[in-house]
Image (cartoon, rainbow over all chains, first blue to last red; front, side, top):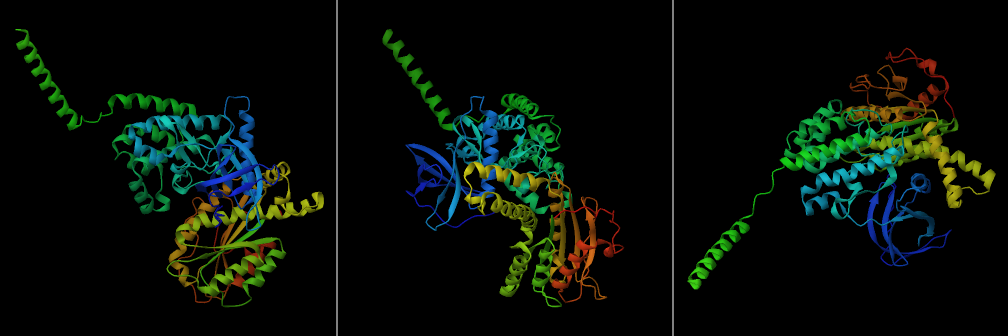
Length: 309
Length: 242
């Protein structure tokens, strides 16, 4: 699964599809997945994301999943995710398979929340749950749900990226990351179902708010002592996570009947949270401005009264 | 499908060459994978060359890993080998049916079909993995990590749709001169089995080759290993497929 390859594609490299003859120009590297590299490319003045792998079977297997999802969604109003599938011959003389998908403009989850503020966390979380609910309704588990695989666009719209772990319900999860994995925490199997993703989602919430403590916890726990209860104990330390303990507990213990229920429960938490959340204190410069404008008003009235007399 | 996964941290020094033993395993339809465990320092040039050659002779893959990454490495190798073994079979078919020997040579639509079959078989074929653990003195501090990796592998295999079983052996076997000893007979579930690997220090030799030969024997005639130091035997040693 870690078949990284060392070559680079410099900016401006032309990629010529072997079977369909489409041409793409490489702009830059966007990121590295578990089984390939993703580049930002351009074709006829449109940006796309292109995933290139050195393992044809692995990549094709991912393409198959994307194609199945696309087929299921054809009737709907969803934009096409998968644009093109082809091979190209690299300068090293080897053919590499690639696929082209819609380019999603966005920031990583950590960057987004750092820039826009934690106020956006409940909205982003809800948006992500809706995405998962859709995937689950089509009988797919996302599998490798983690901070790195969530992109956030304008106004907290979450998008899932890297479909390498997407697995049909009932099969073994194709790709996962230990700390997000239900099996790692002795909380259930690695068989794909909706609850598997909800478990990872709960860990993701903890990761966002308490990444350092989570890292310390995983380093210190003996394998046989890993349990949902340990994650909940950690959650109680954090003021935001504490308010959502019920939700986290249900997700970590697999107690949500389906993802819609989890989303609904999330909304209820959002509702409560938005009312009880301590609003940020008024900054000092604003207080100063208020005093200054009040003084100005008083002066004006005094002056007006005098002038009027 | 039959696999042997050897986990070791050094060179063999007694008996038949492990490369010869691995070649014999492959000839009998068993793929041999090797994980070289390195902590503080490395295996040395000779050690890493040996594990690479064992895997090549056994038709499998080899990787070096720190104890931290042991679980991931063990799973990755097992999974990759399953896919690879199926691919090899598919390649032979491709040659006969389509005249091309590689999946890469197929146009995208046909490739999609072939890969769908590979994935399906990879998820549903019966799988037997025998783990062969180097328990020589230098491996002693790593035994807990090895055991954890085996539990984790078993958890992943349980999630497959096809029946999967593992068996565990360690070498050197005992002070009585046994090359290798069975710790767990074929089982689909290692939950509740505590400390199946020995924590005692073994004598100094590393009979990797003879131990491999024993495990190959075990695949052929499992009964001769019964009645060892373990009560996990539940007679599930029938019906493995090639």
